[in-house]
Length: 248
Image (tube, rainbow, N blue to C red; front, top):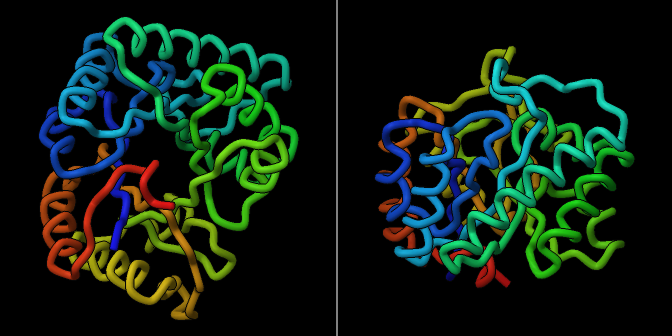
């Protein structure tokens, strides 16, 4: 059985390169929320070398808050910053002959586009314009998934290893207790997801959840430990960790 394991990298954390051999897909910062040019270039090159699927990880242009606050932007302004980020990322990938397999928005933009149709359409069209063959990674049962599919974009549904869930299928806000899971709880959640296609929510209700790809956050202090232990736990459970394009 195949499962894709992805992580957000290129954000300037010291264990970025150590994460790459443990995952099958990487969401690499486009520079708007974090990461120096050298960090991003090195992440792209290392993923290409190690045959890890390369994804563009655009965000609100908000380095001060790590892209985790919704910025009030007109659709035209959001389209402009996304086009700038994706155009730059495409050039960096092309310069070393790397293929961009997917696009996944970051932080507040990821959550906002999951439910807001106007924002979701801007994101989907920017993805399609720059990477017409790429998948768009988003939450299951989201407005973003529906709009992307309507535009003919391949959609990959994502679940999170290290984040708590609400009964409606959305993530527990980072400002609330239970938002971030311990390494052991994260592993239990992922094993539940891949074996039972569901998980226990914050209120102990059962959420049915299909996921093509599982994300662990690269900015957590325990990111490397989680990646190491989760990689082994999935292999021990009989799963082969394989890039996004091979999950269906």
